[in-house]
Structure formats: structure tokens, C-alpha cells
Length: 433
Image 1: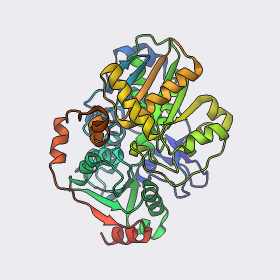
Image 2: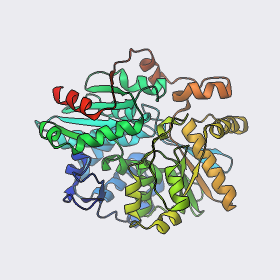
Image 3: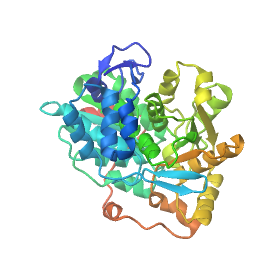
């Protein structure tokens, strides 16, 4: 598997180098030269595959001979022991991607990535520093996915006061090889610090850095798995297929484009954003105008300069018309999000998180605008609502029951380092570490 930088300055790399580096030296993003179509045998056997069997076939198709099949099977079997069922409400189905250990869709990417990095670092004397910026669920998924992985130290940067209490507890209470840094700023400040670290020659000569954000290609490969799994569960696969993706940094949507390239018959992707509507503005006008992120109740999507936008552009050959033809976009404010949480519960007795509510409204807007009927409408349900009890409880009058795997984190003391949003302060801390 050969990969190139979207800026086309840095040299091509193999999968191992792309995963361990995370970001090319030219500050682009790694993209595969080829995303092959899946063989007919895959589609013929899809209904009989387990999730892990299906994931293995998709992964082999993507990465070729980069990893022996038996080793790849072990990576997948270590990563996945949970489901992603469809739950139908009216004319749409929620794909429940929150059944993993940290109750968020990012478990699918982070756990695969942790196992993959561990595989690449086996019998290697070098230690790797994973730097990750999080606006919410990435931090907990990465922390649990990499916990006690030999040869890897994880540093998680997150904006102070801008993630939910449960999200914060999930990655600030683990200790071991996980360090949490509370940045006095926004998610974009955290992401900027991480990017500056990767481009800092002095720092990179002292330490081996990599990323676990969706800027790392090894997050996107496994996130394509559940698009196929959703399709596998459909009763009638001949209907037009629409996926709505609650979107922040746009890694999840990019993974859906990978799945489409491999042959999944997606009619159109629908990007659902909150008040951080940079991509929606782009779809409407053709102008990409990053701006400082604003805080919302769907905080994991509070991104003012989505990195993977440039992967989306690259995927379509930097052709705006092609992007617009394949992707629709809708933006939703906080009040509408709250109303959607209440509406879904009133109508279907089903509780959704704020991010999933944004996706639900985007899907409803798309269906109403396009008058679509008799279609497969799938909304990616990105997190368990209990992680956002402070939002959900006032709307519904109760807090969803807390799963056992969360109770331990809630009762544990937070361990974090407070820091300004100045890059030089972080650099000095990391070099002295």
C-alpha cells in the first residue's frame, strides 16, 4: 500500500510509515494511491460474514500485502468484540456505533489503530509519543485503545471546560501511559499545537511523534468497516442508500467515501454540522472559510477548521461540483438539537445524544427537501446519550442508565495538567518529559 501527501511535496510512504508518522512533513494528509473495488465474492458472502470477518476482507482490500492476513485477523479480533446494530425510528435507522468500551464510534478507529501501531512497533526499541487533540470522544477512545500498549506514550490535549464531565473522566483517570493536558482555549488551539509539534524539526529530532486523530490514515481504514456492516443489515439492499454523518473533523465522512470507492452503493452522503458550519457554507457557496470554533451542546463537532476537508477535496480531484454532487450538508443550532432529542423520545421512546440529534435533523431535512420515499436512510449514531447527561436530563426529565463500564471512571479522581494554548509551553513540557 503506497500513500501520498495531499500537498504532493513529501515523498510517498508505505502504510507503516504513514501510521507511525501520522502527518507528512509538508503538513498535508496521507491518502492511498488506490482504493480497489471489492471482489464479487465479498458481496456474495456479505450476509454470512460476522463483523470481524467482513472487516478482515475490507481491510485486506485496502492495505493489500502490507500485513500478512493472519496478523491482520489477530489485530481485528483484538480490536472488536462489540456490535453496531441498526435501530429503526420511522423512515430512518440509527446505526448504534456506541456499543464499544467508551460508548462512542471512535472505538472502531482507535482500537484498530492501537493494535496496528503495537504490531508495527513490535521488537522495536523506540518509544513513540502519540499526540491527540480531542473535542470529546476521540480522547477517551484513544486512551482506552492505547492503554498499556508497549512502546507507546499517549498525550491527550483537550479544551478546558468544553468537554462533558463523563468524556473528561474517561481519559483523565487512567494513568499508566496516558497523560491528559487541559488547554486554556478551544479544540482548534489543541489541534494547532499538535500540528505544530509534527512540523517542529527540533522536537522531531528528540522524540518520535505520531497522531491518533483522524489525520492519521489508520483511523479512517477501520471506520469504513461499519458502513458495510450497516448495509449488510438492510432488509432490502436495492433501495437508494443515504448516510447522514454528524461531522466535526470529517474523518467519519471521509471513511464513508472510502467505502463508496470500494463499491458500497451509497447514493449520497449527508454531512450534518452544528453552528460550526464551515462545510455547509462550502457546499452552499464553494468557499471554504475556516473560523474559530464556537461551543455547542454537540461539543465533539465543535471544529472551525476541519482537517479532513482536504482529504474530501483530494478524493474528488479538487472539483467543487463533484463534491456537491456526492455530498449534501445541513447545519443545526442548539435549540433545534434539543427539540430533536425530545421529538425522537416522544415519538419512538428512543434516547439519542446531541450529535446524533444533529444527524437526525439533517436526515429529516434532506428527506423533506428531496421528497425521497422508499429509501434506506441511515444516521450514524455516534455516542451513547449517557455521556451527555447534563444536556439530555433537562430535556427529557431523566438521565439514561449508566452502563457498568462507565461507573468506574466516574468514581475515579481526575488527573490532568493545565496549560496555556501557547505552543512553546507545550513543546518545552514534551522535551523535558
